[in-house]
Image (tube, rainbow, N blue to C red; front, side, top):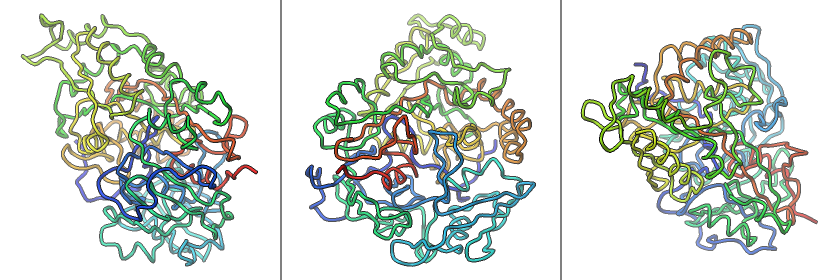
Length: 561
């Protein structure tokens, strides 16, 4: 088993789980004045946003914290470059201006932007960049050193080639001010209620119901045209949909069953950019402490073929989701990385008979109630999803019925966001309806490393650390070795060989059972604000919960004249 011990920190590569509702910030208590509660009145130039947060809002703008509020990631804190996952274009310079690997990929030299200041007025320096990469909380294990070459140049030296970690280093590493963070005793638990960043917005106030961001007049990219942005806490899709319809929310990334009805009057614009996998998380690893029938690979394989994905897409996602590859390469974009030796697309129809054959070959027999059992234990599982996530709740109910038809007992239940977050962080679950963060470049490497590597997880009962996304507790030495081999090469053929090995293992083991590529719907007020990403100009990934991308959108849009 290759589960790491607690205490070794990870580079924070992603915070927002990409699903129709990405909820990261809930809890109890608040800070700020009470006058910020509720929705701002229309006509005052305030952009009202729902990015997925539920009430009560808790002030936390720490980019290293799992409960960070959405506006921190792109609105306040920035990366060196922006990688637009909605396009295959080269990364856009942000705090960095250019970068270059050496020939063997063991060194990365970055030129940083001159004239940038933190929102407290102090200059952004090469020393800040070095500290952001080398402090104990965020330092990647493969980083040997980070050094200032000159006032505008930083060199990162690695323990081995790191070509494939380009995005993690340049597009998902938050630049934070050394003069603030060097004195923080515990950077992970620090609430950071008055964050000092380089981004287009600063924090104005926070309450139980919402938090408000003010335009950074000294932003290096020019002061944002939208002077105030209010992020609301809303507890369910249906409530957010009503607020969108009545003009009380201007921007939201969420699932809506009838987008045409919502946009009929022309005020709201709409775009669907399916990018991110929706899956069943399974706590898969007995050695890591997982318990339940899902720890048997035969049960996971049987459930995989028992699911009717076509029906789930039609009924739960109203046909807006896309087909998924069990390799987790994005179909249509990443096809060249899919091995010819594995199935390209997950089965779209249920095959109860095949599920039964898989279970019977593994020693299971069907009981009188139609549910398979082995050694006196029935194949009965609990599948949880978050209250108010209407699409996921509906999908879970469909999966329960489809599983039963194949002799697998699945009980669909809903939990609060806090319960959901705690269970996946600690591994105290059997099955979860959840999302996987899709890659921001046309390469599945980041999913393989972050979600399948034994180096990115913890034993059951231990919280995952910042940047760890292997909720299934999956640990496979063959996969780990292939991930490391892919990270060490810039040769396409060598990467394909490594990916073929990974794909053979994960399509058999199914620690995450693929369901669909989730519909990523974004609604925006095109009457009062202009400059949104559209099909014709998809300059940024459009949903309001997008990490990094939301800051790009906020710094681009303008109030309508």
